[in-house]
View 1 (tube, rainbow, N blue to C red):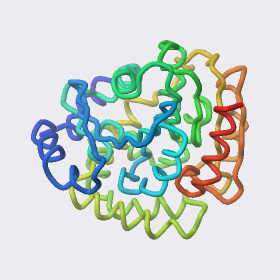
View 2 (cartoon, rainbow, N blue to C red; view 1 turned 45 degrees about the vertical axis):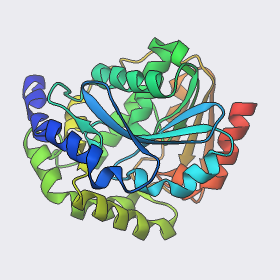
View 3 (tube, helix red, strand yellow; view 1 turned 135 degrees about the vertical axis):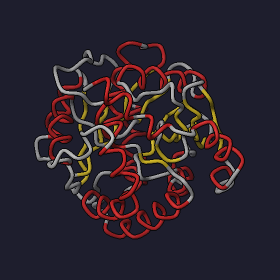
View 4 (tube, one colour; view 1 turned 180 degrees about the horizontal axis):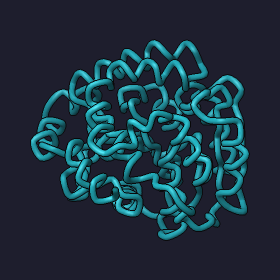
Length: 301
């Protein structure tokens, strides 16, 4: 199964060198003045950076892309050197054939991005499943991470439960079938996902419209490859994080079960959980000012 799943990722990386050039020179490079790219060799990351102060790195949770972060960057740049990056194979971060969406492979590549762009001692504010990458990087590369401020992140078992709930027919979990289904249904699936997961209902339509536009311009949403290769069954491969950790949780997110925020406490010994009643899966975008106040208080505390 693992070998087949690895081979199936080629559907999401096929033609990546050409796409990388198109992204770097075409529409995806021109939507905002602060768009930048960084290439690790396996992945050409697209990111935005603004402000001065402590470096804090956020990950855009697909199908959300950098185009939704204008107001967010305005707020966070008042206190931080804030970086928002699109994940490999997601949005306009082109993943090459040498990248196969594996757990350690993905985390190490994100660590390379953080080391080069954010520098040592950054605050990692990764979102959802990729919060596991932030934890793993903090455990194995502690010099890179001063604190964690995670969005909608639970523990390993919590995400295994989430994976089953989100794919009850096991379509995404099947190599090739999952990748083909995502490619064909991405535009239809995006508004359904936002309707399920976004708690601030005023955000559902603009989020959906943005996703429709970016997907039309070639944005990736390699969810099936991530399902099959990144989050695999079995015991957690991650140690307990020692750095101070904040988890911001939107309680109106209907894509996670009720135990998910409780399980977030299992990440490490020093975990602070803050729940927001009127936010869903994207608390930093749905209640930006509140998220800023919470994170700033945590960082300065």
